Amino acid sequence: MNLLTLPLRTLRRKAMRTALLTVVFAAGICSVVALNYVSKAVGDSMEKKLTAYGANILLQPKVDTLAVGYGGFSLGNVSVDVKSLTREQVDKVRTIELHERIAAVAPKFIALTEVKGQHAAIIGVDWPEELMIKNYWGFEGKTPEAPGEVLVGSRAAATLGLKVGDRFGVQGRDFTVSGLLTPTGSEDDNVLFAGIEDLQAAMGKPGQIHFAEVAALCSGCPIDEIVTQIQQKIPDVDIVAMQKIVKARMYTVHFVQHLALIVSVILLLTACFMIALSLLASVNERKHEIGVLRSLGYSRGSVFSIFCLEALAIGMGAGVAGFLGGFGVSHSVMDMLELGKEATMHMEWWHLGVTLAGVAVISCLSSVIPAWKAANTDPSQALVML
Amino acid sequence: MLQAVNVSKSYGDTLVLDDVSVQVGKGEFVCVVGRSGSGKSSLLNVLSTLTRPDSGHVLYQGENVTAMGEGRINRLRHKDFSIIFQLHHLLPYLTALENVMVPFMNTLRPIGQEIRDKAAECLERVGLGGKGNRLPGNLSGGEQQRVAIARALVKSPEVLFADEPTGSLDKRNGDGIVELLRDLHTEGVSLVMVTHDMGYARLAQRTVVMEDGRVVDGEEVECVTHPKDAVAGEIITQA
Ligand SMILES: Nc1ncnc2c1ncn2[C@@H]1O[C@H](COP(=O)(O)OP(=O)(O)OP(=O)(O)O)[C@@H](O)[C@H]1O
Ligand SMILES: [Mg+2]
Image (cartoon, rainbow over all chains, first blue to last red):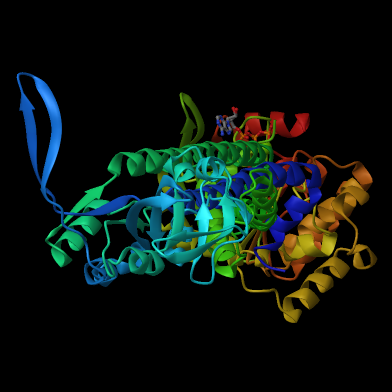
C-alpha cells in the first residue's frame, strides 16, 4: 500500500468509467499506431513501385545535334556524331556516394534487324537489372536464363507469329523464345528482348550501349543530388532525371502520411479531452476526499500525483491494448490493400516502448489541469458542511 | 501549547472571526460552543492550520504557524495535529483498516508492518477490532466515526481537533464517541472539540463560547452553570 493504492482503487471502484476511458484512449492509440504502420508500409510500397514503374534517371550518350529547319518547317535534328556508352561508364553509377539509393542500373543495346523476314527491333538487356526495373512484367513461359533465349513483346509476337519455344536466326546466330510478355501498353509490346552480350556479339558491336536506365529509391528523394553525383562520375554522359513522375509520386506518399498524422493528432486530442473532463468531474466529486487527505498532511504534490497517476494508469492500459490492437488492425488493412507481400512489418519492442512513453506524456499532460485543481483545493473550503 | 493571538478572518464582507484569542494548554480539553454560524468551525480551522487567518497569528509550541511554509504545515498536519469532522469522510473504496493507514499512503514508499500493526491496534482501541476488513459502506454511522478517530489516532498526535464529532450520530453513539475522546484526553492528548451539546461541554476543562465571531466567555467550566455574561448564559440555556 502506498500512494498508488488510492488511484488504482478508485479506478477499480469506478470500473465502468475506467473501462470507457480506456476503450476511448485505446481506440485513439490503436488508430495512431495503425495509421503509422500503414502509412509507412504504403510509403515503402510506393517506393518499391517507383522502381517497379521504371527508371527515374536516364543515361544517354552526349549527342551533338543540329536543329535543321527552314522557313518555319522543322526538319528534325540531324545527328552529327552518334556516340555510345561503354560498360565502364555505366558501371560507374554504382560508385557514387549515394550508391545505396541506386536500385538498378539497366543498360540497353538496340538492334534493328530482321526476324523471320520482317523488320524488328531487338533490345539487348541485362536480365537481372532489367527485371528489377520491369517487375510489373507478366509472362507466358519463363524468363530467359541460358544465352540465346529471348522475350517477345505481345504485339511483336503476333506480327512475327512467334510462340514459346520457337527458334529463329539473327545475323547467323540462333535465338529461342523462352517467354511472351503479356500486353503492357507500352513500347515493350512491339519489341523483342535478348541478353545484351548475345545481341552485341550477334550484331558485331561488343560493349556498345545505347542508353541506360537507372532506378533510384526515392523517399524524400535527393534525386538532384544523385544526378549531380552521377554527372561528376561520368561527365561526358547526358543525365536526365524524370523528376516530374518522382515528385508526383512522392507528393502522394507525403499527402497520405500527413493525412495520417493529422487524423492521429485529432484522435489523440479527443482522447485527452475525455480524460481531462472525466478527471475534472472526478475532482469536483471527490472534493471532500481531497480535503481530508490535505488535512491528514498530504502535500499538494501528493494530491497532484494521485490524479496524475490515475490518468497514467489508464494511459498505460490503453497504451498496451492500443498498440497491440493497432498492430493487428494495420495487418488486416494491409491485407485489404494487398500490401501484405510488399511491406512486411515487424513487431519491435522498442516501438511499444516509444508508444508507451508517448502515451505516458500525453496522459500526464491531459491530467495536468484536473490534478492542478485538486492540488490547490483549499481543505477548509472543501470540508465546509452544507 | 497552542495559541491563537488576535486572529481575524473574513469571507468577502462577512467577518467570521473578529480579533479572537484563545489558548490550549498541553493535555488540556477545551470545548468550543456557540450558535450556528458564530464561527466555531472557522476558529477550529485556523487553529488546525486548515485556514490561514487574515490577521493575527497562531503559535504552536512557541512557533508562528501562520508564517510557516507549505512543507512545515504539511508536517504539522501529518504528525502533530489530527482532525475529526462531523462527517467521517472515510474513503469509500478502502477497508476500515486501510482507511486508518491512509495518513501514511502519501508517498510511493510501501507501508511497513509496524504501521499496519499500529493501525490494527488503533482500530482495536476504538472497539472495531473485528471489522477491519469492512468497507465504510458496511459500517454504521457510529462505527464510521470510530474509524475516523482511529485514523486520527494512528499518527499519535499532540493535539486532536474535533468539529462536532457527534453531530450526525444519535445520542447513544455520540456518547460513545465522546467517551472515547475523553479517554484519549486522559492519556495526554490535547483535545479541542466543537459541540452543540452542553452535556459534552461540561466534561471539558474549559469552555470557549463564541458569538458573532468573538469569544464571549473563556472561563472555567463552572461559569457555564453560573454565567456572568448575559449572552453566554443565553446561548448555554438554548443549547
Ligand atoms: N468558506 C466560507 N466561505 C464563505 N463564508 C463562510 C465560509 N466558511 C464559513 N463561512 C461563514 O462564516 C460564518 C461562520 O461559519 P462557521 O462554519 O465557522 O460557523 P459555526 O459556528 O461552525 O456554525 P455551525 O454550528 O453551523 O457549524 C458563517 O456565517 C458562514 O456562513
Ligand atoms: Mg461548524
